[in-house]
Image (cartoon, rainbow, N blue to C red; front, top):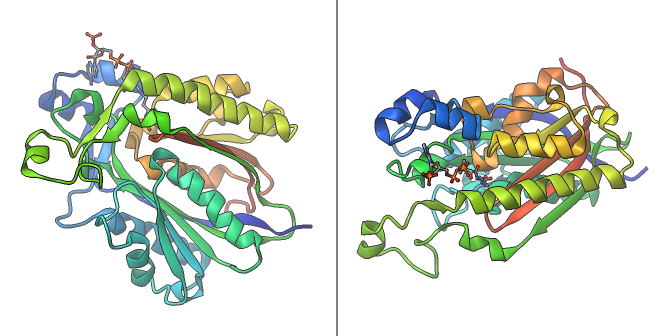
Length: 331
Ligand code: UT7
C-alpha cells in the first residue's frame, strides 16, 4: 500500500483577550443580534502582547504538538507556515518558528493562500511525506488578523480574530491519512477581498496610510455567493468521487468564515449539524487558523478510521476540499 500522510498530533493557541459582540457594540454601529444572526460569531480572541506577531501563536501551537507526541524539534524535517499575516513582509515566518522550536534539521517556508492556506499547506505537506523523503512535517496555520483589520469598519471588524493551530504529518502504511484533495483558485476574485496597499503594486506611502489602505477590504455579499457555491461544490464532489455517503462521514471540518456558509455546505453534503465542527462563535474567522483549531477543539471526539472532509474558501479566490482518514483514538 502506498504511504499516506497521517495527522499524528495537534496543537493550538488562542490569545486570552476576548473581543465580545458587546464590546464591538461600543466601537462601531453594530449589534450583538446582527452579528450573531448574520455570522454566528459571539466573540473572537485578540493578541495583545506588545511586539508579538503570528509566530508568537504558531510557536505555542507547535510546542504543544511536539509535547503531546513526545518528540523534539530536531526530529522535524519541514515546517510549513500557512499565514496571511507573516511577522514581517520579507523574513520567512516559518524559518523563525522552526528555529524557535529547535527544528535545526528542517527547512521551512511560508504559504500564502488567504483563508485556504491551511488546506493548501496540508496537501503540500502531505506530498513531502508521500515521496518518502520526509518523515515529520509540521503544518502550522495562523493569523493575527487584528493587525490588518480596520476597527472603524463594521463590515469586517466583527468577523475576524487571532489564533493558530498546528498538525504533525507522518507516514502511514495502514491507509490512514490524506486520501484525496481538490484544490482550486480563480484570480478574478481578487477585486472582492484584498488589502489595497503595502504590496508591490502599491507600496506603502503616507497617502496609502492616510487612506486606510492597509486594512482588509471585503465585498461581503460577493464573497459570500462564491464561498457558498464553491465550498459546497468541492465538498460534494470529493464525497462523490470517493463513494462516500453522508453516513460514511464522521465530521465536516469547514473554514469558519460564516455560520450560514457552513450550514449551506453541510446541507449540500447531506450532513447534519452534529457532524459539523464549529467554533466560529468563540474565535470568529482566524483565516489560516480555523481548520487546525477545529481539530484542536474536537480532538477528543475523533476515532481512528473516522472519515473527515475539510473544506475552505478564501481571498484570491482560493478554495478546496480534502478527504482524510483519522489515524488515532483519543488518549
Ligand atoms: O474567510 C474568507 C472568505 N470570507 C467570507 O466567506 C465572508 C463572506 N461574506 C459574509 O460572510 C457576509 O457577506 C458578511 C457577514 C460579511 C455580511 O453579511 P451580509 O448578510 O452579506 O450583509 P450585507 O453586506 O449584505 O449587509 C446587509 C446590511 C447592510 O445595510 P443596508 O445596506 O441593508 O442598510 C450593511 O450596511 O447590514 C449592514 N451591516 C451591518 N449592520 C450591523 C454590515 N455590517 C454590519 C454590522 N452590523 N457589523
